[in-house]
Image 1 (cartoon, helix red, strand yellow):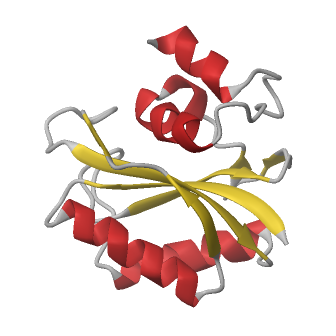
Image 2: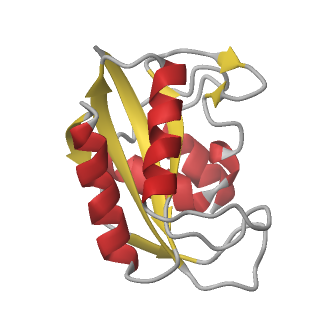
Length: 151
């Protein structure tokens, strides 16, 4: 079983319920949630003219490969009504794979660790709540230190 960190976000509809529903869907595909952060309300990143997000990070365990996990996540997002609009635009649910064990993976469809997580306070704050001492496998710096660098 791999230890995986995911970031969930929503800024449309009942944001908290959307995240709760996504967590339930993740459990249905065999993802075991080990730790869960608080919900964080955050300003949009990238495209600013949209509602604020709620974000939450989880530490979980899965037997799915990184690509299989990504495929299942995309199915959950579609099932919940996510539509691809503008890049970084509003969405019912967004689920990102941040870390998958200490794996470093770069492909056309998946990059692990998430390539922009170290620049995003909305990712680092909830991650630091549940795993401040995790070391970024490429940057060789703890999440706590990464957060200090951007706030």
